[in-house]
Amino acid sequence: QVQVVESGGGLVQTGGSLRLSCAASGRTFSTYAMGWFRQAPGKEREFVATIIWSGGSTYYADSVKGRFTISRDSAKNTVNLQMNSLKPEDTALYYCKLRVAKGLEDYWGKGTLVTVSS
Image 1 (cartoon, rainbow, N blue to C red):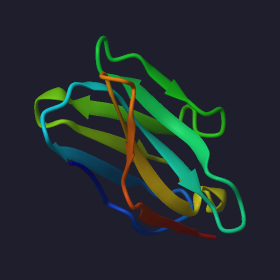
Image 2 (image 1 turned 30 degrees about the horizontal axis):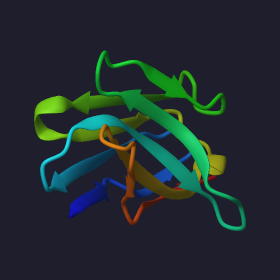
Image 3 (image 1 turned 45 degrees about the vertical axis):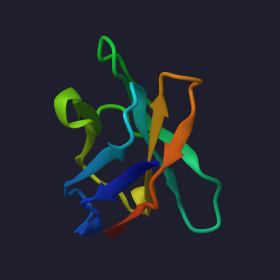
Image 4 (image 1 turned 30 degrees about the vertical axis):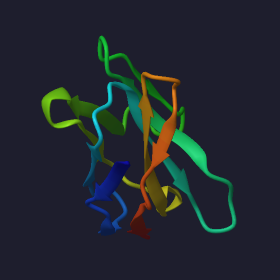
C-alpha cells in the first residue's frame, strides 16, 4: 500500500503565507511526479502545481504563478508548496497527488484545509 499524507494547512490573512508538505510512503515505488490540486466549496477539483521527479521540471496553474513554489526532497519522497501573497480565492481543500512511474498510477492524500480570510 502507498500512503500520501498532507500537512501544513491553516487559517491565514490575505497577503500571508503558508507552506504545505506532503509525504509519500509505503511499499517500494519509483516516483514519476508529485503535485497539488485544490477544491473550493461548490467547485470542482483543479490543478495547482506539479513537479516531475526526474529533472525537477515544475508546472503551475496560471492563477498561482509567481505566488506559489513547488519543491521536492527526493530522498524523503516529499513535496512542498510554498504559498505566498495568499488571496481569499485560494481558500480550498488542498490535495497532494503522487504518480508512480510503474503504470503511472495515482495516489491521493485526504487533503489539508487552507482558509484565507479577507
